[in-house]
Image (cartoon, rainbow, N blue to C red):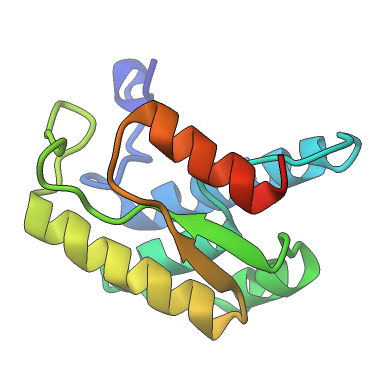
Length: 140
């Protein structure tokens, strides 16, 4: 279920500001849930992604978002998945073109670098190959 099914507008194509704040809330919730977990935790997105999203959307980055990135850091090494044309598809929830997705990725990489993270690019390959790559980089 998405906000538009209940009449809400917190979607990137309807209300970018509201969508960004919901993203931040979700990432803070995820970060706090992971605190008590022993062992590696992998996030699909993080607080820096909200900064990147705002940049891509042409929105300013408010101070509370910079504070969130500082106060709720992730491990210093982050895996990033590059745009991959061979598997890219659009649908009702992914409205970006491949060119837009590529520009978004470049902004995310720049944002994570600016915040001091070291990035490891995932290889384009099968799921098993990517899992093996992540495990090896995590020491498993």
